[in-house]
Image (tube, rainbow, N blue to C red; front, side):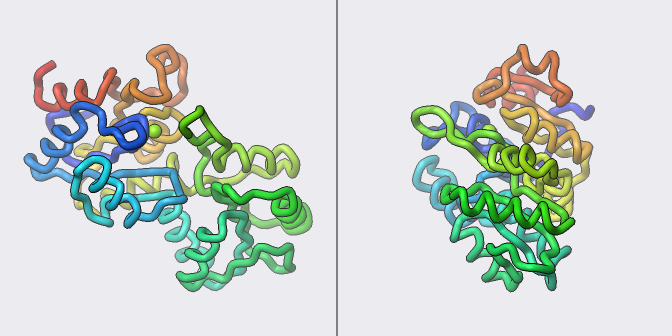
Length: 268
Ligand SMILES: [Mg+2]
């Protein structure tokens, strides 16, 4: 555990941590300025694979009035692409996902199929807002008839929306697991590689790193898996009661992001 005043590399979750929808929480802007002022670096890590880094730059500018660069956004879609390019560059990959997700993978030269063809090398399931029963049947056919690795973009069970929640990738994968008895390896948070990618790109050390989020089984687990200190804020999903019993115990906990900023500045 390294004191907060020595942290330089911050890996932030966005929704429920820095902002809710289009509204930045009090203290988020000031915390990002503080990181700039100490020569640090902020990354925004999101399991939302439906948006690209470019989409996020525009959202940060128009909704939050914050200027960012593409390298600051690490999405589960990016982590999945990176993983597939280094492990299945010449393989045949079965994908269950949106049309735009499939298109993005193909654009990068990967051999993608959405049919139960022979000789498939791995199965990838993403958040799919275009999910159909046919797609579910096909992925089950592949997993029952071919003994291949099964990957999911992100384990999040539910995705926030104005009226509450809708099923996310983790829930879709759970349906497939319940049917086939095969469990996926997830490539977005909490995969430790995310921490490694940020360390490598920024040049900071693990001791200088803090992973900040509101969800224990993705954000905090990601920091723990990567060996970094973690900080939970209670402006999203996690509650102080859950933190007492979770296997994903954060190093630090604050009610708000303002609390974290105050602690970094030595005000508390
Ligand atoms: Mg969140």
